[in-house]
Amino acid sequence: MRIFLSYKSGVNILKIIEVKNLVKSFPLENAKERLQVLKSVSVTVNKGEIFGFIGLSGAGKTSLARCVSALEKADSGEILFNGVDITKLRGKKLRETRKKMGLVFQHFNLLMNSTVYENIAFPLRISKYTKIKERVDELLEIVGLTEKANVYPATLSGGQKQRVGIARALAASPELVICDEATSALDPDTTRSILALIKKIAKDTGVTFLVITHEMDVIKELCTHVAIMEDGKIIEEGPVLQVVTAPKTDTAKRFFSKEYVDASWLEATTPQGHSSKICRAVFIGDVARESIMSDVIRKYDIELSVLSGNIESVGGIMLGSLIIEIIGTDDRVARAIDYFRTHGIGLEVIDHV
Image (cartoon, rainbow, N blue to C red):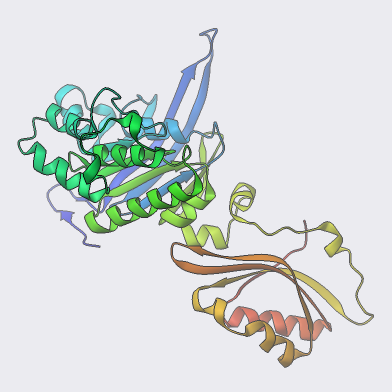
């Protein structure tokens, strides 16, 4: 990734979005009270990232996206886009800034009485783009819909409609594309194809994507970074692999931890003079292919049982996550745990359910 610095302004252009202490509220029905949906939110998104925001309904994800895209006005705080606070922009300056952002919606929001070609050309006509046909043809090829240029949205599948939406969002060559639940209306196979398309576009163009979702598989498959939202706040954030393998908050653990810990496992009896430790073991990358489990059994003469777990791909990296029970003398169990940790296995001893 190339880093550009603006020496005149002192702004590091690597940062495309900086949200600082953002507050947003909406009036309730009686108009005397307000519901606060964003509570002093701060986050930074760097150029080239696919940054995901995940949380349950009502967490504040969409409100944050609408504020960043200037569709909603925040009560207070700053939203710096390439170093410029868009909350202070008005009129022409705001419109020019918003041209650098593209939006992809959950329910497509296509013009149903216009062809695929005209849907993609629409933002270009508004921007008075000079080479509309060339740009639309290029975008149709990118999203794989060259043969659908002259058909109407009603004849398209859900995945094809979303591809039109992505092409339309990219039409004016934006620096940032905001996807608000872009795959939640699609079936699993179509979702995977759309995620692969977005990932390819990000890699080929360098466009930054801000992804709003409640689906953890979208975060794992697509995003480079993730922020977890709850009750209008960001409660945890970081690189996806880091958050998935070592979640700190209970909410993150509920989203990303598939392992089930049964209380009865923690109450099992062990032979006299032995101890039992139930642990969560995380294997990342090539470590997942190594025979560490069998090696540690032979080396320390312990019993080791896999109680539950799964192996999956996170951002193209193999990730194994297991709940294991280690039984043996205190000394051997302690040495086995050290062996795991010194060989690249993330190991957490579970002392509660």
